[in-house]
Length: 73
Image (cartoon, rainbow, N blue to C red; front, top):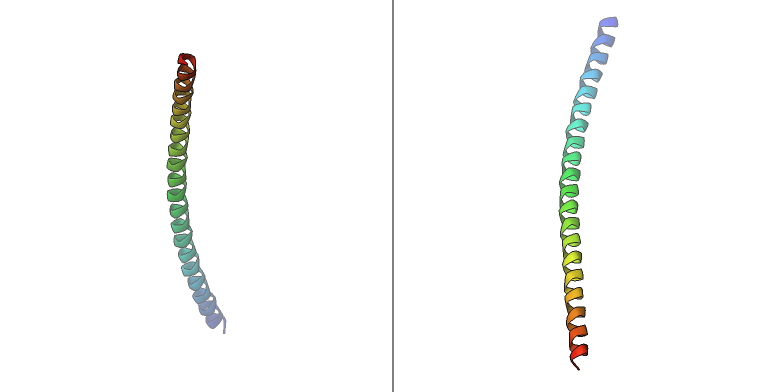
């Protein structure tokens, strides 16, 4: 009987090991996707920041042109 119990426990441990390995692989895939998503978000934020700076510069130039036009009238 003890041998059968040992075989049952060994089988259960093998199943558990396979389940843990599967979970590990799934978590690594999720982590990889999360890293990729973060990189895309960082790139988008850099683009947004650049566009905001460029709009600020355009706004300043437009204001200067409007001021010059007013001064010429």
